[in-house]
Length: 193
Image (cartoon, rainbow, N blue to C red; front, side, top):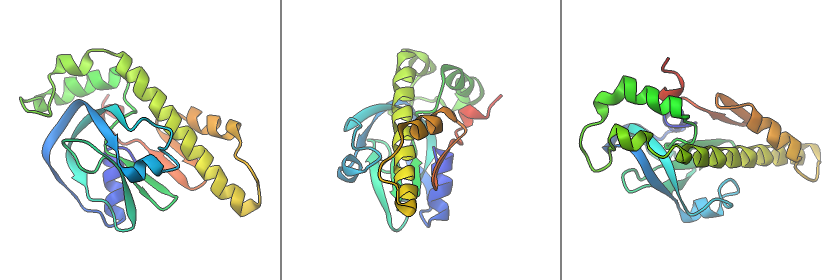
């Protein structure tokens, strides 16, 4: 799950959702934890990367889950539960139009604060969105391959298929499924008309 999707997944798994100590709105760095750096899903990622954020709530890491990433403003930016659930508090799923809609419909939340950027900063440098899309594609590929390995082990297959990974990535930004993994995007930027 992403943002609200991650919060819902964490809550179902026993990680309560609470107000974050401060709102986090804008482009801020996320850092992988040591566990995130070793994770089969994130081991090929940079240890630190830029991501888009728009949240005031956060999740606790569910019992039995592993914290994969954090930021200065939000300790729990990503988690993995067993080989089936991944939660991301940050966004790699936004388009420029999505950010513009958030500013248009939720701009009242852009009040002065250390982790709240002005609308100009949110909309500047659209190449950031291209980079986050690349990171999202990379994650979807990793999920697809991990899912195929799980199914393959159950069926006796010996290697993941790149075409399967690419087909999962092409599903787009609504739902990507890889043999038990489901990445569901529930950020407001995707649903605001």
